[in-house]
Length: 271
Ligand SMILES: C[S@@+](CC[C@H](N)C(=O)[O-])C[C@H]1O[C@@H](n2cnc3c(N)ncnc32)[C@H](O)[C@@H]1O
Image 1: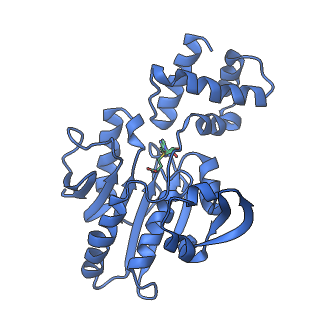
Image 2 (image 1 turned 30 degrees about the horizontal axis):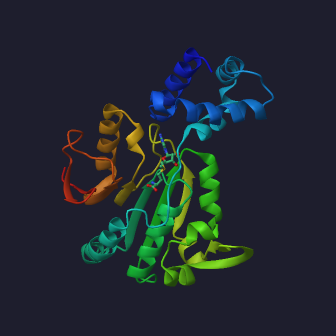
């Protein structure tokens, strides 16, 4: 991969996903794209980039899937789920006297651990017969969406969760190794979530507003301008006083004034 090849990859990544690839990402990108090049039986980066340019409909999805970073876990940044349970859900129950509609968006949901963690928290805190609660889980990486939809996780991924929650919301599917059994999310939480492909930089087809948006560990790779535009759109699609949860290394400081801080990386829409 020449410097020029990496430059082309950087431009394409930013244009199509908002992700800014720094020099320190060069080796990681090299090893991921080289796998695509081998799978296609090609011999070098120049040929691959030419193919990508000529046939984006055939290769762009694979290219995007290779550059995204999908690290996630169940109840990651657990204080967010504590706040959801102790403050947001009781507030929504009080506020929504005339309506039973609750909508939460997990934007950049990766393999599904985040929306399933939200689903477990909602399921615990709400009377299912009374509430029409739904979680929209979106990502632009099509591989991770398929994983989330299937709701199947290895024992290692499930292992860090509270055993009572695992018992209540997951069922073993028999594939046992030394660290335990592969498990599948039960319908009680699966049916709360809809997984859809969506590029945050593109159009959003959703009609209604959201009460809560989780967009965690996604914008760290975006420029400040891209972040500003995105947070502005989040404010527009949130209900008045709606909540926004962001990742541990992210901040709205100097990016937007449409939210106020109400906790560690937790914001409420003010305008
Ligand atoms: C590091 S993961 C974070 C997963 C989860 N939110 C969490 O905090 O555990 C970031 C996710 O954002 C997605 N992503 C990156 N750019 C995106 C974009 N422009 N539109 C939609 N999703 C994007 C990636 O595909 C990846 O799955």
